[in-house]
Length: 219
Image (cartoon, rainbow, N blue to C red):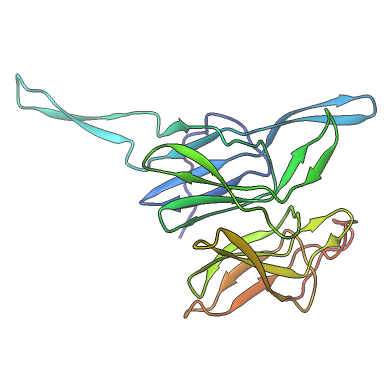
């Protein structure tokens, strides 16, 4: 019942997405290297990604002596970059793909905007492909699988503010459908499901674009 340190990532990241698939941890996007520019902050928004293999202690067999020993390799390796650099996106494993949903994208050196753009990563081919756009651009939305459906919950964007909408992805039609609304709009909250995975549970988050001034304790 304690936390253990692990080797550092290849790239420092804030606002990235992380998910697990087939015993490995994938991290994509985020931003890094802040510097003040003309009264604002220049964030280097990332399209890069990397994967962590927990089995990075490799057993080496010496063929001449039949002895073996353990050696540590770098557990982080890069994957193909996303088509669109972003941070604050939803990121989740679903089926045979890793899905990136919305987020903030740069429109200038210092300005960002929420996007409706989505893409998915094929682990077997190490390639990204675009999928249908969301109905509503959103950053700070939370991705989850409920009732077997890929789902994005809440988030925020201009001019809509903090969102209460919930969208689900129809893979057969390659389309997002708005399927419901939360009782309380929220962005950057925690999202999970009940044990049977047929209900969405939301906790905390921000209720307005003035966050962190309007942080929620509601669930």
